[in-house]
Image 1 (tube, rainbow, N blue to C red):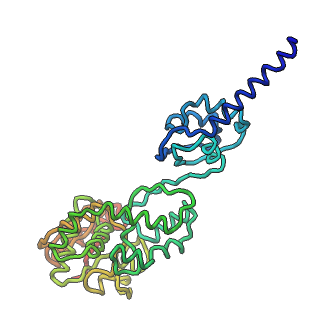
Image 2 (cartoon, one colour):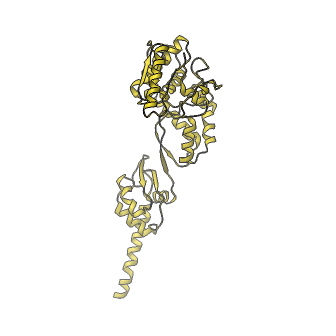
Image 3 (tube, one colour):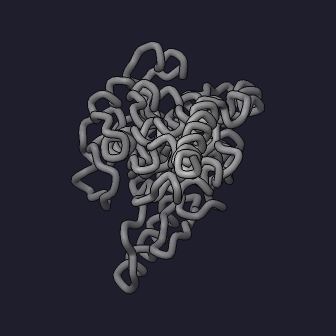
Length: 345
């Protein structure tokens, strides 16, 4: 009898624990529809990840989770490393399935200020496996262009530079719509009032801001740079902005040479008067604010020096002298690719 009782006790315990596991695995760890973010490092198991899951509230107890997965037989299953976004209301069984299959992972991607569609498309290709052509096509969609009130051929300039968390499997349309929505949220309603009083459109402001974004090295010079271009527009001078030439050539970084200034494109502001048809990059909040708030001055030229500062001048003669000083500094120092904006009269 004693021997039979001894043989039954482990069986009873196993049955009891299995019953508990069945209940716990299928019971939501917390009510609600909010999400928790958790990072699973390479090589982690459920046992080693249990503390992280408990810390963000996805399970009530790391100890209980370890016991449950051990009894359920799922403790030996591998889990996929990565950053996850997991609903708090998920049952433990759903949680484990998600980790085992790698579903719900997301990528944190930072788009710097001044990037254009070409650069954004490449990073989405490398990070999210989204074909470049698919993203480019999504930016050309007529409904999106209408929504952003752009007359350009795509939504260049409206893909807001920020840090995003994109889920694995997101589509090109999903990426573009998320970035456009972020632009809408970052655009301040007060700016609409200001530019309406100035007789300008949002598209004109975003286009100017994109040039400012590419030109400015120092944050405290953004407003003055925007003012120079507004002064030129007001007086009928061509903008002669080097970054627009690079955009016309399909380039993002290069010292603009005299031969480049003849490129045939509506974006070449050395040849075409006024603003280009649309933005040449994605401006950040500071450049947008500069383009909105810059007022008229008597400065018509500026040139950027190797150390990042710019010299602003009122006459072409003074500008020519400043360009000479910039070139001397470049020969003597450590210049990389200084911008000599508006070097022609």
